[in-house]
Every structure is written in structure tokens, then in C-alpha cells.
Length: 198
Image (cartoon, rainbow, N blue to C red; front, side):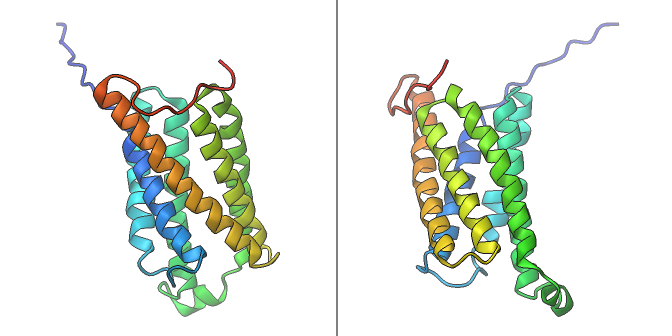
């Protein structure tokens, strides 16, 4: 006996994932640039918007057979959950023994790993829009600055990372606006630039 399978269409999750990235980088950059202090109130946004929102976008991008979106949103979503947990450890929230044994250089290796992944994404972005290419290039700068700061190369690199993070947030807000409005109105409202290579 044959059963009729109902195919359920799901909306493109890209704008949700991009909003997660845009908001968490905006909040985190404010701390790196000294506009705000401490990390206590960055944590919820890192975990829920940076982490879970991007993971939700990743899951639905898998349904859309979108290799880039599913991999990128999944990887960056897990990054922000990992960062949130690392901040909790360093602040002593998970115990003084764990905080005392934390070696910041280990985070430097995490940042190098994400730097390599983002370089791969940036290479693939030559077939996407120019806005996506420059957004990923800024994320490369962010991880480069974070890695150097973690290895003790000076607080200048924290400032570089903060500037890159703020630029990432602003550009991501633009890209998500273009994606949402262009899709909503069925025409190009905001331009993101043609790919460097087709």
C-alpha cells in the first residue's frame, strides 16, 4: 500500500542566522572596544542568538541542501556556545579550580582552527555576492586578531578584533536586510554585489 508523503516547505533560514551573527558581534564588539565592561550580559546573547539561532538556521539549511549555510551557521553557532562556556569557566562560574587551570593560549588554537575554516569559506564566497566575500574576509581578520591576542601578542590585537567585529555586525545587518527585503518584495531592493566569479 502506497502512502502519500506530504512535502513540507520551510522558509529560507538565512536571515535568522544572519541576525544571530549580527547581534552577538555587535554586543561582543562593544566589550572588546571598551564601550561596555565585563561579559556577564554578553553571555545570553552569545548562547541564544549567536549559538542557538545560528544552529536552528543550520538545521533548516540542511533541509534546503545548502552546504555553505548549513556548515557555516552550524560551525559559528557552536563557536558562540563554546565561547559562552569558556567565558563561564574564566569567570569562575563553573568552579575556582577550573578557572585557575584555564590556559588562554588554548583559545588561540581554537581561533586558528576557525581562522582556517573561515579562509575556506572566504574562498568559496568568490562565487557568492561581494558583500558575503567581504563579510567573511572581516571574520578572517577577527580570528587573526583574537588568536594573536590569546598568544600574548599585545592588547592592540584585541582592538583590531573589536573593530573587525563591529564591522562584521554592521555588514551582516546590511546583508540580512538585503536578503529579507529582496525576498519579501520579489525584486532587488538592496544590492549585495555580483560574485567575483560565476
